[in-house]
Amino acid sequence: MAGRGNTVHNPPSSFDGFQQELVTLLPQLRAFARSLCGNREQADDLVQEAAVRAWSARSSFTPGTSMRAWTFTILRNTYFSDLRRQKRQDSLASEDVRDWVPPEQEGHIHIADVERALARLNADRRAALLLVTTGDFSYAEAAEICGCPIGTLRSRVSRARRDLEMMLDGTMPAEQK
Amino acid sequence: MLSQADRPGDGGKKPAAHAPSAGRRDRQPGWVQGLRQIYNSVLEEPLPPSFDSLLKKLDEENGGQG
Image (tube, rainbow over all chains, first blue to last red; front, side, top):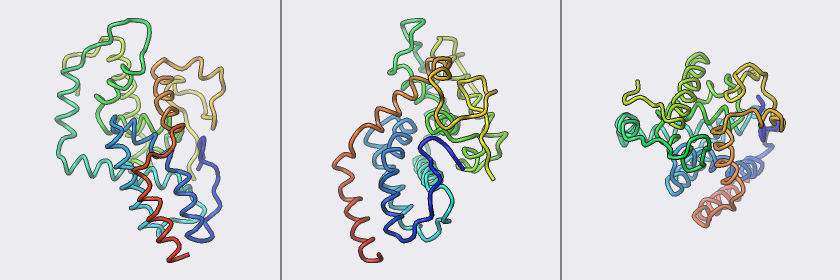
């Protein structure tokens, strides 16, 4: 497996190596979580929860595989577990799309508008899009992380991309499936 | 074995490179650059103090098993 910042890792020879690599990955996990949650505090809580889970499950990590992909998988799964527990994924997505207010300035994209639009994406689509853009994972890697077929992953990315573009150019319809 | 595949933002037709070239980045839609800007801004942040207890836990438990 590969990806930017996803170097081929030698298997940790001890839990000390595992610990060092986990700590090294924390900034990337924070960056992924921030875009996934759209909230600094929630994202940092999520990263810490995922890191504790990864540490607890360290004996199940397969040496020679990508620890980056492994930890991103744990973080993504933790995020969706939290969402399900809060039972708010669907309501958030639909309500937020209806409430979407297009950017005022045309022809220039502001970071704040990208953040707003990202937060209004369906969570599955948002995760898929982030993994293959900022995460620099391949579609196959992202599908593995999301636990879905690659065709599903491609569809999620495509729809996320369409939804983002429609929100940012002001053509988002009143309802979205 | 996983393979590299196409990515959004470049029309989905180019094989992915680990680090997109400056030329590819220039051709990316604005929102992709926005996403990268958000991501990179967090990457550059130092770990906040709220992570101290996590780092301490990892050190302590690693010392216990290491």
